[in-house]
Amino acid sequence: MELSGTACLMLAAMLFDAVIGDPRRLYRVLPHPTVVMGGVLSFCDRRLNRSAFGAPARRLAGAASTLAVVAAFGALGGLASVGLSRLWGGFWVEALLVSALIAQNSLYRHVADVARALECDGLEAGKHAVSHIVGRDPESLDAHGVARSAVESLAENFGDGVAAPVLWGLILGLPGIAAYKALNTADSMIGHLDRRHRDFGWAAARLDDLANWVPARVAGILLAMSGIQRRRMAVALRVMWRDGGTHRSVNAGYPEGAMAGALGLRLAGPRRYRGVAADDPWLGEAAVEATAADIRRGLRVYLGACLLLAVLIAVPCALAV
Image (tube, rainbow, N blue to C red):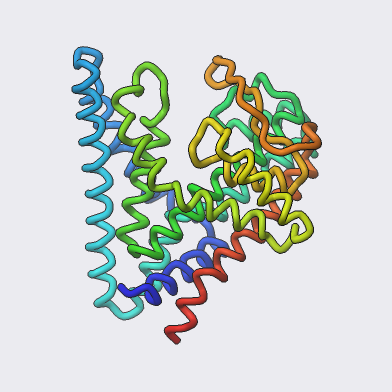
């Protein structure tokens, strides 16, 4: 499929996702694609990531598992794309399939749930809501920490949940976005540095870093340029380039830094993961005490960035009309 074709496909998928998101009734009957990906990866983890194997063997097994899953789902995406291209209305069915691999709607809802919980039900409800979208220990957070965590998750996941799949889909169509989501799912499941996955998940983590390198920076620029916050665009860009590289992740610091500059907040900083303290540097400047109102402001910046991304991919689509 040519660039104009994949651009139209991604634009249609973004619109479908914005309007209908992930239909809960459908996914009560059929598993979500990422659930299937996760099931395959979990099987590989149980069978091949054993303490009896040495570290080199676990690294090799993890790399082979990751590459096999990425290749398999990329191939399935390719077969589906070819098959649907021969059917009347196949473009729209393919766009619906692609929309399931873009998280813009679900990300908005999950982050908005945190703001609503803090506003209506207090700190404990906020901790419960934020536990669904962050890896840190929610029990160690106060209300400001809950709000910061929600804003950070919004920025980071705009990068790897929206911008990256759309950009990989723009380049390679359904096979590209399916392969990317398989890799990103592998990173989230086995790519962390706990004792069990330090070796087995090494390849997944490194490959995911590579796949997100450009999208993360594009995501940061889009957040900085969001039309809702035009007056702070220069500040957001400055904070992103100054502080983005200080983050523990080679990619997450760029969209998080842009969001910090756009909102006039400090994000990241010291936190706890699985009971372990992490003395991470701050991103941004000024206020630390984020509130539910800042989550709402972050959501407006996020919506502006999603709109800019849609406009960006609409250009080659419009040229083909």
